[in-house]
Each structure stands twice: as C-alpha cells, then as structure tokens.
Length: 263
Image 1: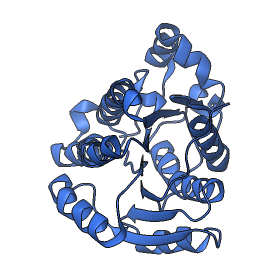
Image 2: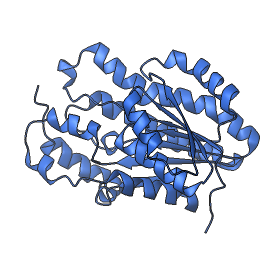
Image 3: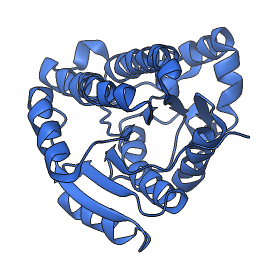
C-alpha cells in the first residue's frame, strides 16, 4: 500500500472550524514535525485549533479573509518567505447562505463564490508550481455533495462547490504525473457551525430530519487515509457514496424533497 511522503509545511484554510481543526489534528498526528499554517478570519478559533495540536507539530496562525482573493498572492509570498516552501494545501474554508436565487443579494452571493471557489482556485495556482518543481506535494479540496445534486437555496453554494470539485478532479489528473497528489472531498452534512447555520435557514422537512450527520474527526481520518493510499476522492458520510454513484436518482430525490429556505 502506498504511503504519502512526510509533509513539511501545510496551509489549512478554514482551520478555526470543526472540519478544518479536525484535519489539522489528523495531519499533525500522521506527520510528526509538520509545520501547519492555520488560516481563518476567526482569531479565537485559530487559537483553539493551534492549542489542540500535538506537541510534535508547530503552527503559525494567519488571519486571511478569503472573501478578498486579490490579496492572497502577496500573503502567500510573505508566508513562503517567512516559513519556507509549502508542500501541502488544504482548501477547507467555506461559507454557506441558504436562499433562493430570487432572494439572494448579489453581495452575499459574491462572497460565497469568492470564499468557496475563487480563493481556493487562487491558492491552488499559487501552490502547484512549486510542488511540481519539487516533484512532491498534496492538495486537498473540500467540496460538498451540494455540488453534486441540486438542493433548494444552494444555487451559489452548490455552484461554487461544483466548480471547485471539477477543478480539483482535473488538477488530480494534471498533477499526478508530477508527484502531486490531489484529493477531492465530498461531504454530506457534517457537524459544524456551517452545518448548524444552514439548517437554521431551512424549513422543517422529512428529508432534513433523515439526513445522517457526519463527524469531523471521522472525516479527517478518511482524508488522511486517502492520502496514504493514493486515493483521489473521499465521500462522507458513507450513505452519500450511494448518491455519488447514482447522481441521477439522488438529483430526482433532492429536486422533489429537499427542504426549502425559510426566507
């Protein structure tokens, strides 16, 4: 079974959140001595994530606003100059606002697109050339099953995640021959502040009540396992693998029964 090389310097966006924090802990446990650059806009959350890391890991915290993608190249260059080349990138930051297309203010929709699609693509383009030159690197892009099936109220979020997923899948093909391993993650509902906020914007429905809830630590473990095994896709919770394999049927179900936004 292949095993991913030891990572030296990994950037994790959304590191203050439940999933980003779990991925930081899982990568630190799997790669002792790794230097994690924890990125988010939540200073208190970043501090909690850094404090929860094992003693074998080092961490730096960075307040980057992914709603301002044009600022990222300069921030990336400063990070590399200060802490060295990056051989791992985890695009985990995300925002979600559940509203119909008719009810979505453009400023809100634009922020969803910037955080969930434009900035992850920007960071991939910043990270990939150096990884290709070194012949080694890993990129993890956390997409969503909302980018695979149509969910009411998720035109912007689902559109952004669908775009990220396709870009990630293409990058996996393009970079595999250069020693860069790309993993695309398709979560269904996973316990997190983002998930709680999204549910609060939905009207009660049978499908919403029946959707299984995933555990961030369990998902993080599956991502690390995928890196070790050379796998390129993670779908979690396991039930959603069925939807991933039968997108047509899953789309029919969500078109008919997905809960409507409350507003």
